[in-house]
Image (cartoon, rainbow, N blue to C red; front, side, top):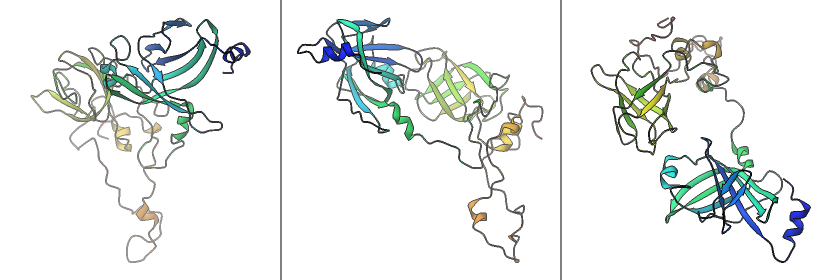
Length: 320
C-alpha cells in the first residue's frame, strides 16, 4: 500500500498527530484492535483499544525477498489478550496488520506491516509476540517427496475422502481426563481398536471449545471406557461432559487406505518404490538379487493399524 501525498506531507510537518494501530485476527475469526494512542480509535468498524499497553519494536524491512520481522509487547487483560488464551494457543498463527495513521484524519493511513504471529510468550504480567512477515512462507518446503507412505492429508483435496460418512467421525462426551492428554469415553464399542489413532480430536463445548489435537493412542478394552491419548496437551481446562469430535486416523499405508477407507484410487504414495539397499545392490548369481525386475525383493516391514483380528465394519471390502 503506497503512502498518500497528503499523509506524506503531514509526516513532513514539525508537529504530527500520528498513532500506530495493530489489527489481530485469530484463526477462529475473532478480531482485536490495539493502539499506542492515549484514546481509543475506531477505523473501518473496528475499535482499537488504548488500554492494552501495546507497543512494538522497530520494524526490520528490506527490499527483495528478505523476511520482514518485528516484535509486539503488551499487557495481559481479560477483555483483550488473556493468559488463558495464550496458553491455549488461540493466537498462534493469527494474522496481524500494523498501521500508521493520522488520528485526526483516518483517511491518511499507511499499512507498514502484514504477517502472522509466530512465537508468543507470557512475561512479567504481559506478553511478547514475534511477528513474521509474508515472506516467512518462502521458508516452507514446496513440492512432493517420493516415498512409500501417502503424503496427502486425510480428507484434503488430494485424498478426497469424505470424513462425514457414517463411522468416520463421531461426537462423544468426555467421561474423565488426565493431564489434558488422556481422555476416556463410553459407548464407542462399535469402533475397532486403534480406529481413531492418528486422527483429529476437536473440542466442541466448554472452555477449550475450538481447540484441536492429534490422537497418539486409541485403545479399546472390553468392559472399560475407551482411552484416547493426545500427542500434546490441549492447554485448556476440560471437565467431564465436555463434548468432542473424534475423526478416524490414517497411518498413510496402502492397506489401510484400501481396507479402512476404500479409497486406494486416491492413494498418494509409492508403495512399490525400491528401498535404498536394493538400489545400491549389484547383480549376483548366488542369490535372488540377479538384476531382474525386483519382484523377489522382500517387503519392507510396516506398522499396520489392523493386527489381523480387527475388521472395518464400515467398509464392505474389509478383510479382503
